[in-house]
Structures are given as C-alpha cells and as structure tokens.
Image (cartoon, rainbow, N blue to C red; front, top):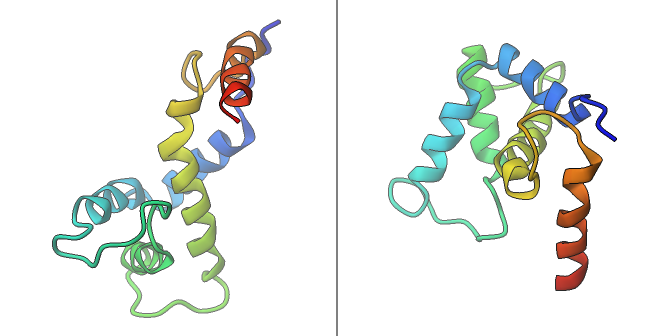
Length: 113
C-alpha cells in the first residue's frame, strides 16, 4: 500500500535548504577538497562538524555562532548525512514513502548482517 507521504527527514532537509540555501553545495565542495585542500578525515565520517560550523557561519555571514544558532550545526550535519545517503537505501520514487519499495531493501540489509 502506498501512502505518498514524504519522510520526516526529507521535510526537515527541505526546510534547512531554505534557511541555508548554499549548504548542500558547500558541503559538496568540502568533501571534494577532503585530503587535498583540507585535512583528510575517516571514511566513516561524512563530514566533520567543523565543516558544518563553517557552513553555518558562511550562510549567516558570522565569524562565530551564538547559542541561538549553534544547534543548527548539528542539525545540518545530521540532515546532510541523511540527504547524501538517502538515495542509496531508497528504491522507490524520490521523496515518496512506499512500503513495497522498502521491503526488498530491508531484506537485503538483514541478509548482509
């Protein structure tokens, strides 16, 4: 049965993209410079929090972040990693929840563990 509802992280990702319109392009640039212009970081790490901190600073035109906005660093980090890997786990149409499409993915994950 299809319910055509966007997953909650997709809604949060869209909202974050409106608040920080350049964030996704900036993180792509950070990752492209990994080990070249920037220090290398472990493979298990999508991007260090320092990258997200720099993005929030750049997007808000600040040199440092105050307590009212510092939480956006971790929120963007979580959403950015989710956004990057979403298409690797989802077999159905973009931004549409369909339980029929999730079942084969869940089975594959269970078979590999």
